[in-house]
Structure formats: C-alpha cells, structure tokens
Length: 277
Image 1: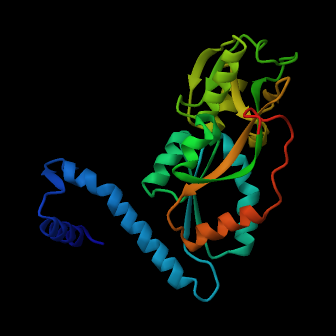
Image 2: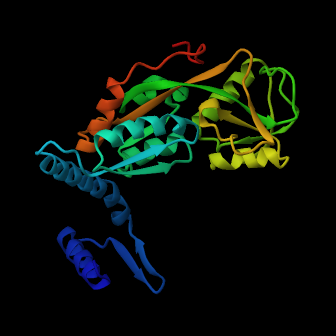
Image 3: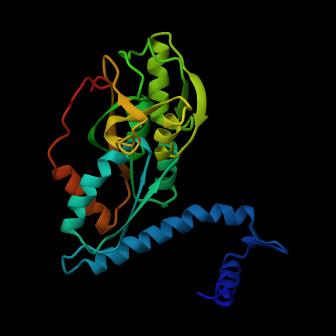
C-alpha cells in the first residue's frame, strides 16, 4: 500500500471512530491514547481474519498460511525436531520463529497476537498462573547447567560453583528465576557479569574470559566453541519445557502444529524435575 493510500485509509478510520489516532508532527506520526488503546483490538481483528482465511484456504485438506512462534532462549532446543516433522507433513506453511527476551515476553506476544504459539519454561511462575489464561502442553524436560571455560575441572553442585562472574539472561527470563531460587535454597549466590538476551553470545563470552553461563544441555550452543564446555550439576537441575497458546481459536497451521506435538511420544524424564512433576 502506498503512503497516500495509507493516509487516506487512516483518515477514513479516524472519521468513522470520531477521534484522532495519531498526532501529526514534523517528525512523523505519534499515537494518541486512543491510538494506543486500539492496538490490541486491531491485532485481535487481524488474527480473526487470519483464522478465517486459513479455514477457507484449507477446505481442500492442504494446510497453508503463516505460523509465528515465539520462544525463550533456553527452550529453542525443542524446536528443530518438531518443526522438521511438521514441515514434512505441511510444506506449504510459512514459519517465522521470533526469539523473545524471556517467558514474560513470549506471553506478551501471545496476548498481543504478535505470535500464535510460544515455547519456554513457564512453570517457574507457577503453572496455575499461566494455565488460567493459556493452554499449556508439556513438550519435554531440559537439564540446566553451566558453560565454563574448557580448562575448568571439578564437580559442580549448587553450593560449590566456580568463583566466576555469571552471564545470564534478563531478569524476566523464568529459567533465570528458577536457577536463582534454587541457589537461594542452599544459601548460595553468584556474581553478575554480563546480562544478554542473545543465547548464542554466551559461549563466545565464556571462551573469551567473561565468566560462566547458565544454559540448557539441549541448546548445544557450545558445540562451535572449544574454549567453553557444558557441565551438568550434581544432582541435576531439570526444568519442564512447555508449548503455550491462547484459548481463542487457532489458525489451521497452528492447530496442525499443536496436534502433531500432542501425537508425538510423551517426553522422557531424564532426571528429577525442579517442580517435582
């Protein structure tokens, strides 16, 4: 759509709503309070339109359309296998994967229709707090451990960690919350070194002497960095990983993805999960 056509459509919408949605300034458009209030309902309308299009497009049986998935940094290790199986069954679906800053951001993207499915460690906030608003599917368990310099040796326990600065995700990443809760439980703490949302920055930072980093074993982000190695804890620290989505109707592509996950073999438990489940 051209700028002129967009301006005409916006003016027409403002006349219909009888209110200004944007302030026009020399620097451009700035949303008014009414404009900001319209964002979420507008996204709901767009989602409903996407559902309607997918229903019509898939009458013939072939699943098409677009699927947007938001994932927290640690839980993305579950995606490749699931997406590979899904793509083989539904090759016409266009898939977008967005890395969120943490589980709170994943849920925000679901609430605002910026994503339709989310992956993460949602139990850390309390399973009931999430399941009241979203549908949750358990997809597996992740062992959480430390990336440490390759030359480091010795057993790792929560109350006997290397005296190194810690590279961590933002505070609203629930895996970090779970780790810090476990540390407090044994009266331990670590020194903050670097905070980064970028999962793939952690191994090179460890390799270049910035400290150690909490990561999931399944992420395998240390594979390309010989100067950093994954070390599990004794006893293991294991977090359940979940797929979540809103309770409203999903598009055909999202419905097919959830169905494929639910028909897969149940997740295997390799160690005692942190929530005891």
